[in-house]
Length: 403
Ligand code: HEC
Ligand code: HEC
Ligand code: HEC
Ligand code: HEC
Image (cartoon, rainbow, N blue to C red):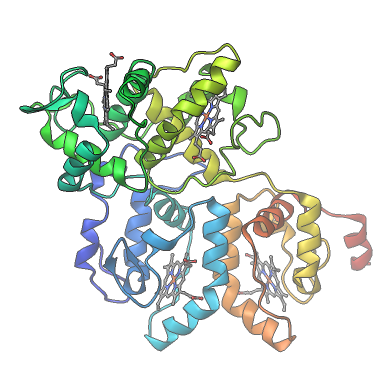
């Protein structure tokens, strides 16, 4: 465990992420490395003030529980908007305000973003109660108890990944849903973490045989293909305009872990299959890692967020006072030029530079009586689009200023 630069040694954080859990998350150029992000969270002293799922400090909010997981921009806006209060607290507790270099901020964001991707450990005791309450027990047996009309569920390999169980459940929908209705029962729905608890129970009862593959993080590139070949894109847009039969999966609230997401997808099985048969389609089934791939695609796409608008970004750049100090075209003036530094930069790099320079910038703003700028995630998306793509190389106007 890394020791904090501030000398704070958070023994408890070891509980948060077992290395094996995040190892399969694809580390890609545009996306930070969540494992490194976890180390940075400790070494930069964030953990002295923030707990993640209960482990860590109490001075700031628990980032595992409260933090919105909409996109990178939602995380970055939350961190920026709170930075004045955060800085005050850091001074009060004599903690050093961290500076980030290289991919550090990207790694930290990837860590915070992926905190929610994996389930909290489920409660098998509660899952046992749900197994009866949701009537699974009427058709499925575990050990000696339970009905016989559905397959025994204790033949599942012990420790089968929850997403694989969700995939089994989904694939059997066409037979199981009519069978449930034939008994006059409601098709079970899962709220909150119920599906995680229920699966924890099933996983604990399975055959004592290690599951062969424990891969829970999928491959987003394959997932994109699954999204298209399984016809999801016929009804769902992902940050788009096109089909509006189902909700836009970029905009709809998809908080919660990947298994909870699978639970919500299951909840919509009846409505979805009805909508599909109206289009002459049958509900798709998933093999191998397809469901995991699909969800990793949805999560990655959501991290990137909706594309921003340069034009709106330009307006925000003027409104929030950036243009006043950095020049209307980023050519500099009361503050350094932004053009050379930011043109073509990734969103993570822009956020990192803003964070590192914030103390000097804020001090100057105070002097000029410019209020500290706060951003909605949408505003930040537009602003970064403008800063990264919209600043001219050398505009006629900047040449004029030089003359
Ligand atoms: C000295 C204590 C302290 C340290 C150290 C600290 N924070 Fe904070 N942080 C806070 C407080 C207090 C708030 C809430 C501020 C407010 O309510 O405006 C906060 C808010 C946040 C938020 C917004 C949370 C939300 O729910 O909107 C994020 C994100 C965040 N911090 C990330 C970090 C990261 C990443 C680090 C390490 C680089 C860090 N913080 C270090 C005290 C701290
Ligand atoms: C009315 C009876 C009935 C109820 C109630 C029921 N199931 Fe099923 N279930 C079935 C049948 C029948 C199948 C086999 C479907 C097939 O062959 O395609 C099945 C298949 C499954 C499978 C796939 C098993 C495998 O070996 O791949 C899982 C997992 C499952 N059910 C879980 C559940 C859970 C969890 C509940 C409660 C929330 C539940 N079932 C409620 C009848 C039921
Ligand atoms: C024929 C149209 C159709 C197809 C094809 C379809 N869906 Fe849906 N989907 C819907 C509808 C309609 C809803 C909303 C149902 C409701 O509100 O009960 C929905 C809801 C969802 C939800 C829940 C969203 C939420 O806010 O809780 C998820 C997740 C989802 N679909 C994923 C998928 C995936 C993944 C695929 C491809 C395998 C897919 N859908 C294919 C029509 C479709
Ligand atoms: C009151 C003047 C002022 C305002 C308003 C201002 N800045 Fe700055 N900014 C500065 C100063 C001064 C620096 C250099 C700080 C340093 O050297 O640490 C700076 C540095 C930066 C940097 C780092 C540049 C680099 O080379 O890495 C970025 C990015 C930045 N500002 C973006 C913005 C954005 C976006 C806004 C509008 C939301 C803004 N600034 C508003 C004065 C300002």
